[in-house]
Image 1 (cartoon, protein in one colour):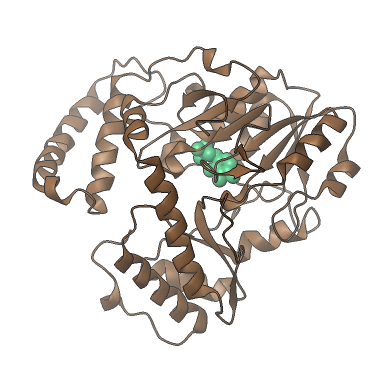
Image 2: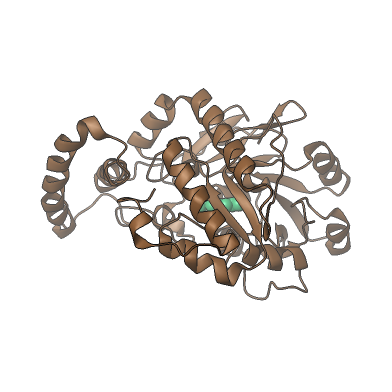
Length: 377
Ligand SMILES: *Cc1c(COP(=O)(O)O)cnc(C)c1O
């Protein structure tokens, strides 16, 4: 993403979508093509812009179903959101040609693909616009970006989020690092600081005056799918910028790929489950490890209760999107589980996760509380 062109650092990926639509002057009377396999935070900015989302189908390998899009084209469709699911890029040469042929703008949704390339071009550099969710790849509280290889969107003026926001971004990073035991040598010092923080934080909260009119942190950073337009012109926090600059990008790429390969080897031939992507091409840097399971309703609660960090992308589809809209999307929103392959996972944690997943899928053993590590990550 950082090589995609002009880059504007904001507080979430959804803000990036909203800014792209605004820059392209897409609004009332226009339609935007959104994949039927989505999270609602991809749709909210379209509604905010006043445009109508048109949901298109994907194929079982999560590729865009261009035949379906062709049937939906009319004079009012302006832009195609193309999502690189789980880090695996769409065919961008074909997608670009398709958009040019039909006079559509292309927005690459790189929320799952901060890194990677397609046909030798960096991800995010083929569309007029690209967005990413920086916080999905780096240990930061908030952060997303809008990139453009065409337009100098980095000149869009942004404002500072205010001191509460800056402090909250720092505190949250420290708190998460502590909770997941990633800063052991500094642990004691941090515990003291965090103890102080709870008192300071109470004081801060009690202060009415604040430079930020929108509260201390964006909902996007706290797990909400809503789009809060009050954050549209706020810059990513200073601490997020520093972490983004200091994080060894090579290491993020290498470790995520290694962790994915490990999960792939362990879960490849499991009866009742199969990896959505059974190979990891050299151009891909995975977001998570997606696994298709046959019995989601039985397996999900077992893993959730055991403390395995399990999520379902598209668990909540936009109202009205169902099997008729896209059978694959409706199916995947239930049956595709995603497991982390984060760069900071330790070998023992991945091994534990694999043991839990295997047991749950096979239904062999009952996962007992005692096998649960003190802190799940
Ligand atoms: C998370 C996500 C977004 C939105 O990113 P935020 O940073 O959460 O706003 C957009 N598209 C996809 C595919 C996502 O997974």
